[in-house]
Image 1: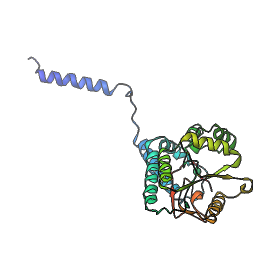
Image 2 (image 1 turned 90 degrees about the horizontal axis):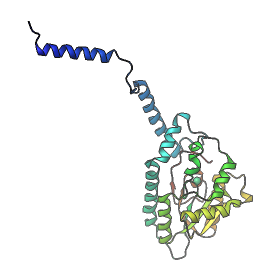
Image 3 (image 1 turned 180 degrees about the horizontal axis):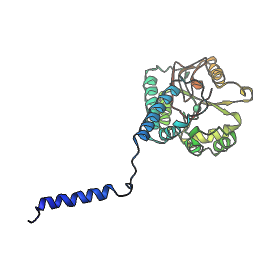
Image 4 (image 1 turned 90 degrees about the vertical axis):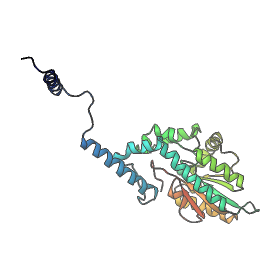
Length: 258
Ligand SMILES: [Mg+2]
């Protein structure tokens, strides 16, 4: 009796399946459930760690958690960093529009430089995105190059504020002996016509950033300026005394300056 064509096909299919299932490992190795779970856990943990850092709930911190190194790299080099910076600039601008600018030229806005007006991403890209211990020598070489680009949203904000009539004070923790390189870099990045560049002089050496910046803001207040807004990537740019009426915190998960 001739076999039924359908049973023959079924037989062939069974042979094929058994030969595939007995063959060696599949070419593409999919992550195991455990791998996937630990990646999700790291992403979740690092997003929460980042929020704690930005809100200053983490307080003073020295090192990016090892499990968050790739999170920080992805954040800094992906679209999120630029998007977060834009949101900060947008809220700053919305507030600036609500300020009534007087005719006495005393309405001020204070900007920090590093990771506020300028991004040092090219430097940090070569130094583990902040995961390496800070090295003053290589940092000074980078500063002298005067090649840090502008954060686009900050440059736009800067130009809008100038047009609105704010006096722009740039207050940085960089040292007075870096004035030329810093001024050159700001110009190179497009920050033209700033009203004053304030750097750490010899008498400011060793002063905590919060105190140093507060003292310089206090000097401005004593000169009759009203500090309406202040922009910085560190809480030490924004806290202390003679604080601005509104402070705007830019993101920075790479390092903390107390
Ligand atoms: Mg800074």
